Length: 297
Length: 297
Image 1 (cartoon, each protein chain N blue to C red):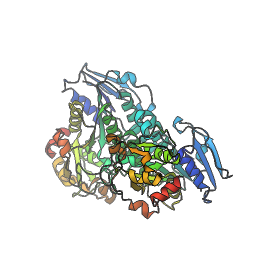
Image 2 (image 1 turned 90 degrees about the vertical axis):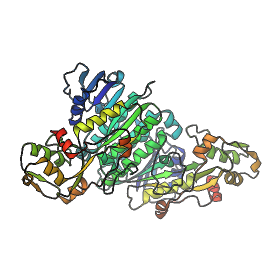
Image 3 (image 1 turned 30 degrees about the vertical axis):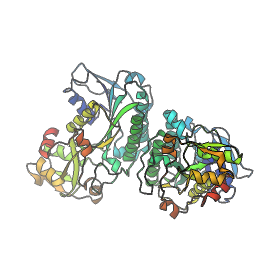
Image 4 (image 1 turned 180 degrees about the horizontal axis):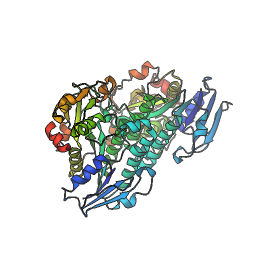
C-alpha cells in the first residue's frame, strides 16, 4: 500500500507517522502538510509541503497513492471563528482530493478523520443509529463531508470510510483552537506535577482516546480489505474527571475543580456510548484508563 | 422586500417571476441566470446574466437584496452524470452566496429549493422525523447544503429556510436531466391529445405539485416573518398513475402503461407523506388533482 497522510505535521499526523513504522504493509508513505512535516528515519517515508486549500495541482502528489489518511483540518474553535476558512479546508480541499482520486480502475482507499462533533451537543446516549445533528461549524462541515464520502463510495469510485474521533489526548499545550483543551492540558500538568484547575466538576464525564490508539484505528481503516463508505463512531473510554485526576496525579489535591457550567454542558456531560459497528471491524478504545495514561506518557 | 431569484430563467424560476406580479410586498426583483432571463412587464423587475458557478464577484449583485430565492441548480440526472459540475453549482455556488450574505446587521432571508431527493430511495412513509439518507449525487449535495443552511442560521447571520420540493409538473418536454420526466410529459401529451406510454403501472404512486403552487410556497418562504433555519418537506398530492391519466385524458385508452420495474421503484412507489411542520407554516399542495391540472393548464 502506498499511503498519503495529510495534516501529517499535526499532533495526530505525527503520531500516525510514528505508528506506521510498525506496519511493513506500507511500501511508501508520503507525509504532507502546509510546511514540510518531520519524517521518521525510514526510507519508505517522504515529506512535502502542500497547501491543500490553495487549490494547487494535486494530481502528481496523488499519482502513486493507493490510500489516503486525511487529517488536514481547521479545528473546532478556529472553524467557529472563521467559517469561510473552515469551508475552504474542511470541505473544499477534501472534496478536491476525492475528485482527484475518483475514477481509478482500482478505487483508492480514503480514510477520513471525522468527529463526534457531527452529533452536536451530545445529551443522550449515542449508538450507531443516532442521527447526526451538528450544532457548530466544525461538526456541520464534518457531516457534510461524511455525506459526500458515502456518495463517492456508492458510485464505486473511491473506497471511503469515516472514523468519528472522540477527544484525543494529550494534545500539545496551548491549543487555543480547541475548546476542549483542558482534557489534554491536565495530562501535561500532571506530567510536570503542577497544580491544575479543571474547568468541570469531578462528576463530569468525557469520552477520550490516546493519540496512539487513534493512529492505530486510522491505520486499520486504511488496511481494511473493503469498506462500505460508512461513517463509524469510534469506541472511546468514558471516564469521569475525578477518575482521570486520581489516575494521573499521585497527589490529586493538586487539582482544583472549578465547574464552568457552559463548558461542562458541552465537554463534560458525555452520556454512555455504544459502537458495535466499529467494534465488529476491530476498532477499539484504549482498553482501560491505566492503559490510556501509559499510551500517552 | 428586495428580492433576488437565481435560476430565474428556468421552469420554476419563470413561474416564480410571473407569480411575483401578484405580490406588491416585493419592491424590487432581480432575476438572474446564466443567460439573461425573460422578465415580466413590470418596472419592479430587472434581469441580468451571471454564472454563479464561475466564482465571479457577486457583492454588487447582492448589495441591495433582502431576500434570495435560490433555484439555480444542476438537476438530478445531470448531477449524476457529472458530479464535479454538480459540486460547483449545487454546493460551491450556494455556499458562496451564503458567505456573501453573511454578517449583515439585518440578516437576509435565504430560501433554498431543496428536494425530496435528500431521502434517497423512498420506500417507507415519510414524515417530519424521517432521517435524510440520500442515495444519488443530487440528493447528497442538496442535503449537504441543508446542513450548511442550518449552520448559517444558527450563527444568526442569514435567515435560512429550505423547502424540499416533490415532483414539479409540468416541466417542459425533453428535459433529459430529469429521470422523472414522464410525470410532466404526460401533461403535454394529454394537452395535445396524443397517445402516451407511461413507464410505470397504473398502480404507481407519485407525489406531485404544480409549478404555480411551488412558486407560491417559495414566495411564502421569502415573506415569513422569521425562520428557524429548518429544512421542510413540502406537502404534495399523492396520486396514482391511473388517477392522473383519467383526469388528464378524455379518452384514457390513449395511454398505455408499460411498467419499467427499475423506474417504478424509483419514481412510482411513493408511500404516504405527512408534512405537519410545513403545513403549520401555511405551505400547501394543490388541494386536489383537478385543481393541480387546472393550475398546470
